[in-house]
Amino acid sequence: MGDRKVTNKYIPADFDPKLIPRGKKLSAKDGTVPVRMMLPFSIQCSTCNTFMYRGRKFNSKKEPVGGSEGRYLGIQRWRFYIKCTHCSRPVTFLTDPKNADYEMESGASRNYEVYKDKEQTE
Image (tube, rainbow, N blue to C red; front, side):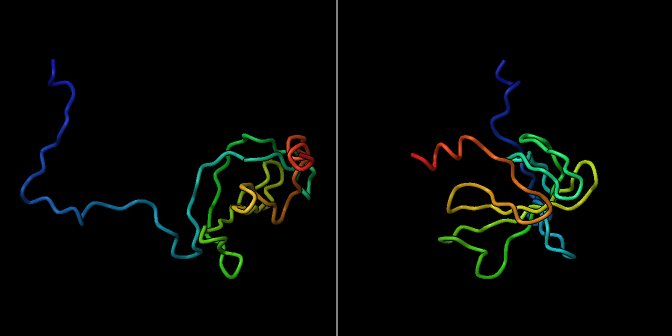
């Protein structure tokens, strides 16, 4: 009965860990990493006025933000690229570690969120 749960694995003598492929690396051509993510907030496309709601899944690309805006207190900021579901216009947004949130960069506008208004008044 104890054989169905393997607690250790056999490692052959000629095993070389350097030959095992590593995780995803940055793409050499544009410096982005493909990421499957959910939209963290609701947005409206600037071109076709289509609403995309929070929780919608996207295949996005992620890249580190460069320059002076690239870090906040040593925390790396990231830029995400997605496409509008209706017109395929690129939409970009950034992480905002200062406010533990995201900020829209281009391609769409962020919809009004009631809970953020309540937090600001308190």
